[in-house]
Image 1 (cartoon, rainbow, N blue to C red):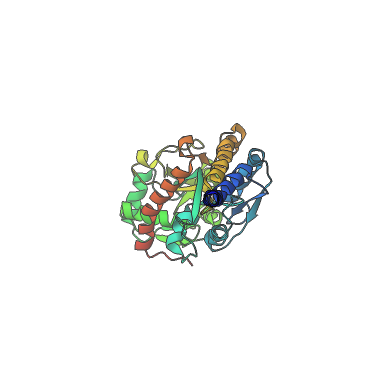
Image 2: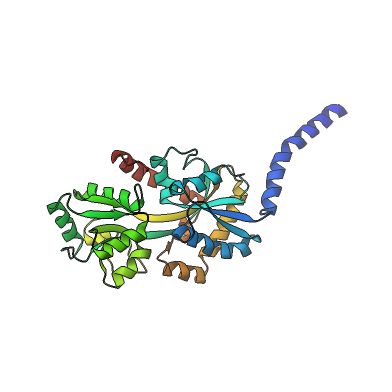
Length: 328
């Protein structure tokens, strides 16, 4: 009888060890420096956001946070690194619409954008403006659409590259307005914006950060914000709903993910560190100055990011596939 009881006790103790180990690891997390993978070169929106977050998250988590830039294949190299990392919360990724939505339809990836990561939180969104060169005869969005309809295949729209948000968003614009124009791919949004200012291309979906200085300088025209609310950085520009193209929303949203299997308690600690950072007044001012809008507090949850990403995939994948867009 004593042997039976002893065997049962040992069995229960052994079964409890993995759970106890997970709890202990979550309680002492993080045990070493945390790496945030930015899947693009330094200087872009993801890199800037990552460095702003890292500066404040260090004090919340009590560990050094290192930013590592791994560029290539529209962000899929860096994201793939995180998909293969140990699920212990010490390697996470900051991604966006392109890396965690569009790439799933553009590339044959070694990971699943929706299934191989644990969402941490939505962070910010960068609204896009519908803009054109000054020589365009249109005075508002309705007139721009009418001008494009009257001149099929004659206008040109710049993009940051094949499959970028400006490209795919431009395809959606054509679909909902019944217009046709040619896409001109560039190596990034900045050179495309320069050619728009110079009048070499006619129009563009361009995010607020590079476009607003040109709008304020009178170098290009801005017709609408492709969102359901006006931008705090440019409240004078109407939304697409107000300008005559309701529901045409195109935004480069950014979030953070950990490898699949990362313990929930670790995710909760990471989420708390990001949320408290985004609530900091100095951080909010800094991000607003960069044209980034912080998601409402009730959307800064792992569950909200998972639902948002899924909805974006359901919206954009059919558009990408129907247009036959392939990564170059």
